[in-house]
Image 1 (spheres, rainbow, N blue to C red):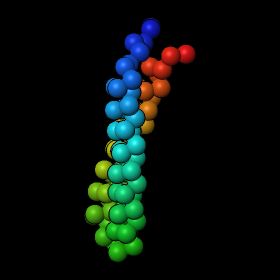
Image 2 (image 1 turned 180 degrees about the vertical axis):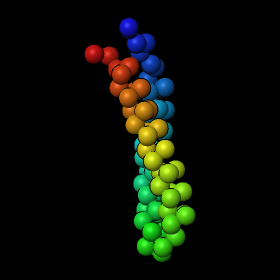
Image 3 (image 1 turned 90 degrees about the vertical axis):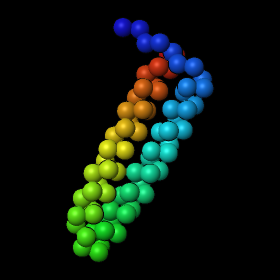
Length: 71
């Protein structure tokens, strides 16, 4: 199966989203750590869950970007 190469502008937009998603996930993980320190386990669970989802989406974006790079 041959993948279609994406335009530079699309690649740049996806890379920007990748970086931003990683940053947001890191912020949520930091908030998770603070919630755990404060024994707020309900919030900690929510924060970790959302951070995990964003991190996973960022990793999926990375795969899409680099799979479509020219060999």
